Image (cartoon, rainbow, N blue to C red; front, side, top):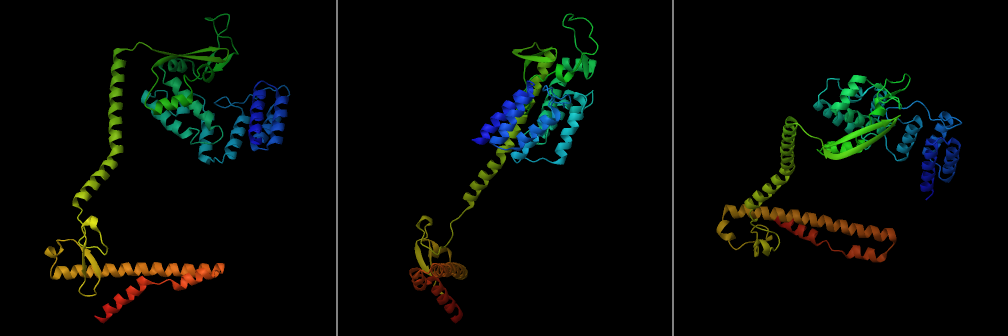
Length: 389
């Protein structure tokens, strides 16, 4: 309960920080630390005291995802509290994404990269930086930056504008929409070109084998971006439609092959089971009475007199040498069975005696002393006959 209250106060403090109310945020963080001390609250307090100003001005240094250092420190603290670790290689990979200056560098492709190259690069990086696999500080924002880069470069019109203006483009004057740009007012493409859809939706669509078919328009106004999604498909050219049909057919073939490969081990097991049942034959004898297998006729071995059971047609198949060899197997199996049973009886007697001594229980001691080792006695008799013969 205290931890939930502390988390609620921390979230309120973060809202205060975003609106510039630094003092109120500090008060809420101190209260959260008092209710339930946590690394998350302590890191935020240190970050506000070290980076924040008296008027609650936001720090100017931001990474590729637009997050402040304090948010990275908070993410690190949250990951430590939840027991999520990360490797040095993952941390360095996140830092590399943060240092990237354009979308091509983020995806690690050249400016002449084809659509297939972009897909391969996004697939590799999205799996590597997904928050479920990479818990390094800033990995979430690196994942968002990768999704944003792919969303822009995979759109032909936006990629053309991006290649034309470079990493930055001038901001148009509100009073003169078609006029020249004012010097000193520049914004990066990362702000003017927000991702068409969220990184999580892009990830789900990409790896689910489906891509959005609607048109997505992004409007920008002095740094604020508004995106709108229209489900109506844009007109398609004949070549584009034919290419999409070919891709869809290839995907169907691949899905069919994948499904067959997944079911192949099950089919092999079923086939092996059927063949085994067809080749399986009932054993010629059993040490015990088994009417389900037809082993109901009682016999004894000629050498040691070991009892065993056979079916009604046994005498027609086993005579002479074959019968003697089979009875040797019967006697060997019987001796193995008696040895195993004898060991279990001795173990049971030893356990009872130990418990009786441990708990000073005379009843258990008497039970251990009176326990008969019937299998051991039978084993001794059989071994005696074997030595005598």
